[in-house]
Image (cartoon, rainbow, N blue to C red; front, side, top):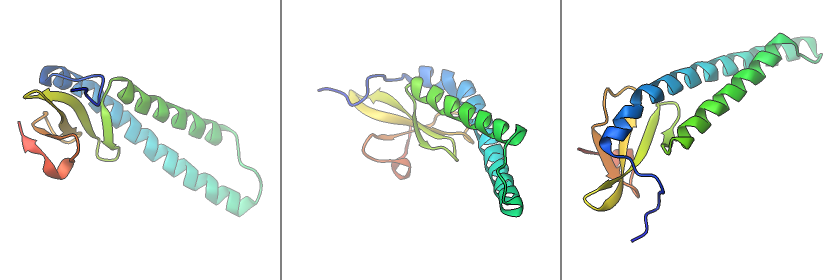
Amino acid sequence: MPYQFEKHFTLEEARALLPELRSIFRDAHRRRDVVQKTDTELGQELKQSGAEVGGEKVSGLLMDMLQLNVQLRRIQELGVQIKDFDRGLVDFPHIRDGREVHLCWELEEDDIEFWHDIDTGYGARERL
């Protein structure tokens, strides 16, 4: 039977990625917050002055947006499925008892302790 995903993680492989994923998500969340704050500030400046805004703030905004995109692509390149960016919720394609499932983890969890079928989601998580 053909599998939906090309890459499948063992539990050990998925666990080995957790430090990197924590770092990526924390940086990406920080950048997202800066982008949102800067965007709001620039919008207010534009509203008040009516003139074009630019300079260092806009350059910084663009760099943070670019780096945020780089971080999200990095997660995808690892073969990990992002399910909820804000929560840092990801799925790792995995073979369990001969069938394709997802190992499920989110940023606030210490370890990967759950799995679910690929056609279900977070609400159907089961303990490993």
